[in-house]
Image 1 (tube, rainbow, N blue to C red):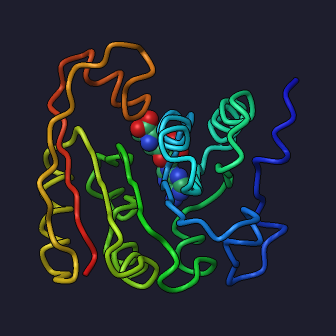
Image 2 (cartoon, rainbow, N blue to C red):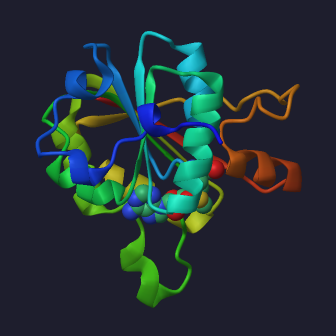
Length: 202
Ligand SMILES: C[S@@+](CC[C@H](N)C(=O)[O-])C[C@H]1O[C@@H](n2cnc3c(N)ncnc32)[C@H](O)[C@@H]1O
């Protein structure tokens, strides 16, 4: 079995606030992904940008492990994955103005209205993003749920330091790993609409 220890960070080893150089061993720009699932975005982004560090947080330990195994097999020294709650990590552990980018792809929609408060993309997260993104940093959000997308856009419109940027529709992938994430692959193959937002933090 592949050793994922070098690519794994556990809450039990962290003292808030963390210092990114302690985690990555360098001071390269840090991009964070909230709800990394099986880690396809982290793997592709880390190979495309070897001089950026990528930190993925995934609540479901089983998927966090699958994602970290993918990273370990590829030997991507610029990736770490934390199994656990991204909202707790953002609120308590991430230092101010320390992130170059944040990525939130296909957050769980929690369809039932009594469960909506479990959605990760909410006001407290946006406040944490305002605190933790560097000026000039970026936020990318993608979902297949139109209603959730409208809520996200309305919420972001109330935070004026986030400037909406045009987000081009990606071209058709040539390879099964050319997708943004595992859920993007599944939903694009199913032909579902996909909503993409991109913001620059001023
Ligand atoms: C629909 S999946 C999308 C996974 C991946 N982003 C993709 O597009 O393939 C949503 C993921 O977010 C994770 N998640 C939900 N709440 C979370 C939280 N508070 N912190 C970290 N991950 C969370 C879930 O466990 C799940 O793996």
